[in-house]
Length: 168
Image (cartoon, rainbow, N blue to C red; front, side, top):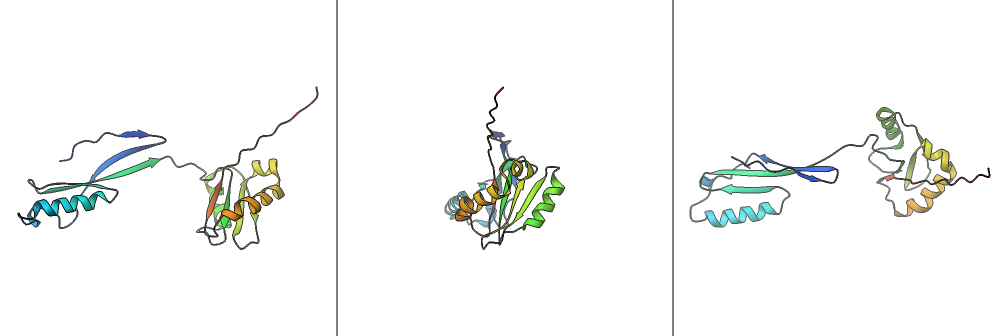
């Protein structure tokens, strides 16, 4: 029988440890009585290397595994201000644009790029209105392309500050 484990609060997520069924072939009867201590210690040491925790109670013949789960709220849309999509990324610009249309009412603009690294740039239209298409394209090509691989999808979190002065 497993004891109740406390829920550990964290930043934007919660840790919960859940008991899992014992792995196949690991029982107290499967261990020779002279080697129980050695094999149990080896089993525990091997298990500690993985992300799950394994405990063994030889006297009752039970095995218990615990798994740690990180739960985090999914942000909709999964894009803040924009995405830079690599030429060989897992999803292309057209598919991502369709996905964003289905997930949110927010409007996004797509810039198709003829480049060996970058295929598409998808930016919120509100950001595009403030910066302009050419400035976004220039920034991505000069600053983001040099650090990007062609298989990556990079999310952009853009902070824009407009200072407006007027004489009254």
